[in-house]
Image (cartoon, rainbow, N blue to C red):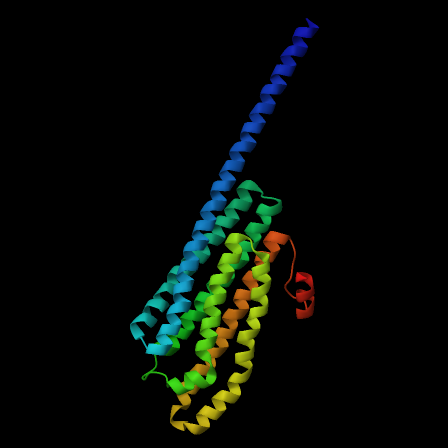
Length: 254
């Protein structure tokens, strides 16, 4: 009788273990599906932001007001994705209580999402400057201020930080943090270049002031891309690199 009861208890315990395992497996599978859905939304948002940044350079060169309007219109979609991704991450926290690498990925995505939205806002602001202009920008002004070089640097950084996230490449992420110095350097020389230009061409002072604002916004985009690169390092290596002196960042890489 006792042996029969023990056997029955063991069988019940075994069924309970199997049931619990099935529940855990189901939750893990659902978590993976939700993570994949969030990743898809981030990719879609990234496509929109990339269009805004890349299109901005074309608008600047060609004074394409129709393209500027498209960039501005994309801003509403970017904002909608920002809200959607935030809600998806919040729901995932509430339903699945993620830990370890999944937790770091979600925390990183929340901050990456916020920075992408800011990049989109900045690109939209640049498009508004250009859309409201009456004439095309003087090529001499673009050359002296190196604003097109800033655009090219920002474009390539945005593409590469996306690759760093997708491939979990922290070496590329660290390199991107250093590449932001290119934008900082051009921004640092901009005031002198603008002053020289506006003294030579006083009739184009309004254009010079707009380019000054555009340069500041491009420098800000570089900072926001750097923030994303720092989140890639946090997600992959579980290391926080922001708010450290630059020499410490460099040593940390070595």
